[in-house]
Image (cartoon, rainbow, N blue to C red; front, side, top):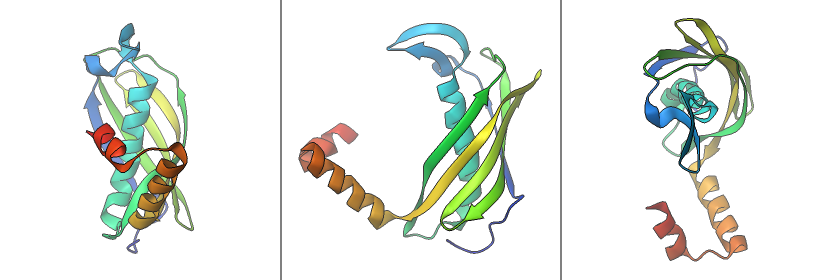
Length: 145
């Protein structure tokens, strides 16, 4: 990882809640509110913004922990802001506190931890799992499409 990342560093993103972000399971709509799944995606995306400038070409960041308390409802058409703040750097792990807010206040808070790993390590792990699962290479390629 390139030098420079430090505790206190922040990144912010904003998004509008759209129907594809509503809570649903197996294609069945639960309610027209921001789902926790969509919220966690945005929180991880905000945290990723911090590490992107520091990744070397041979490195990748992968999520290793997410802990979120989703406290407030957010209907469609409402803007949400997510702020990620680096709180700890240890070995290859970058921990960020994340907070989401809307016009009414705090939507959620939590922690996102990303591990900085070698791309070759990720590729090797994928191959190991494919072997154990009995997946042929052409099967995994067609599943990615």
